[in-house]
Length: 169
Image (cartoon, rainbow, N blue to C red; front, top):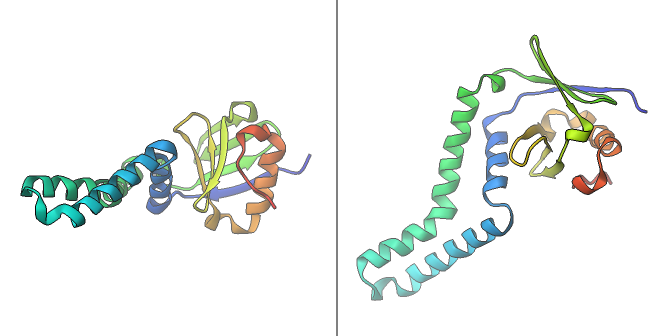
């Protein structure tokens, strides 16, 4: 096998925001939310003058809910997570090895064995390695640019291809 790959990342607020938004708008739930918002906004502009002001407000609120309000509150939530979670205050050090992904920070160290990785996803300039359906390691591409492709290839060699949506071509 290839030598170990070592790198460090520090998750920024915008990295957390992209991760949170990906989960908020992923799949059928996200499609329904966007369709609902567009339909509400269309209803507001098409029928706005012909309906009671309370209905007009409901249409406007429904239109803004998933297109403005949720993204804004998600950004606020991401800011709180980064500010209040001690692990995000300092960089995380990663070592990809044959056993799995070793993550360390100061004197603390953890190992995520390759067989415990349930999903590897690459979207929005992030590589996410999941250990549960909603928790994973966020690896921003911009922070590991020089080794990003070798990092993806190393992960592909060690995880089941069915759980991996990473493209290395």
